[in-house]
Length: 390
Image (cartoon, rainbow, N blue to C red; front, side, top):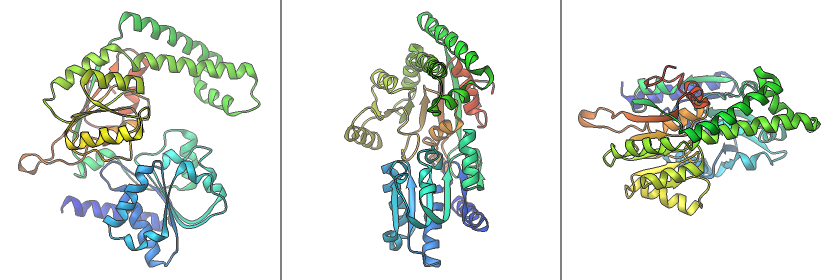
């Protein structure tokens, strides 16, 4: 059975599961599965067969609005486009008393904040399909989604690789050390973190800080604890995000790639700009004008430049063709972020004899720091990881 046919069957299985669940549910699928097509087919067939009159597609970015419109045309549903509305989450939560036959929530994990949830409370719909690369990691978000639209189908990134939907990959985790001056800053920040963690309640400090800041009636002293706790986290992360030895190793890896297209990810816009300067790349992040971002992305697509440096803007919602190497220099503890970044590199690209070329991914992290713990959590559920005991 050809890969395309197998993918079609899996997509059909996801839609059938959704139908059996009463047309309310969540499809969780890794890169290469074709989540957007599932959303398009769900809307298209519901509007055509059941003679429904309107649908709403919710997405996190304006780029995804345009991409979804293109998907409707690509898969032969351009005749129903006049009955489909496309909107970003940051606009949808302001809607009140609207009625929809079907709502599709793309990258639903980004639409689960308390503010964005207002859409589901203030409007009505008959059918709901949520799609995402992974389930939310935050307990509150996961509980809310399970209540709103329980999971009806799930396939992991590694399953998509094994089924041939995307290219195979290898993740190489490479450690660097902090310089002596950086180590002093890290130790100071970490000491502050431990202090405020203890004062908040050592075993659940983060949730306690979140609760305090969300409560308008929290005592000023409690708010101070939460603020200082968050500040310590930020200060500690700033040190590892901007470690000088990351730049040195990054340059060495780039020089060994012999002109291959490379995506790099920094932990902050500041460090992304440093990467860009060090390796003669171009930037794509929220700190530069959209016109410049678009121009840089186009130069990367055409091959005019071979290194594209990002922070978060390329994590999702953009198809980056022909990128063979990925270098991640900024980490969070979330496996979702890691899966999204890995997914930028796994588009199928055939080599000799039709064999899929593997994607090479390097993760540069600071040894003996919190970043090492974040890394273990972020790659713990992925195959083909070398260089760290997870």
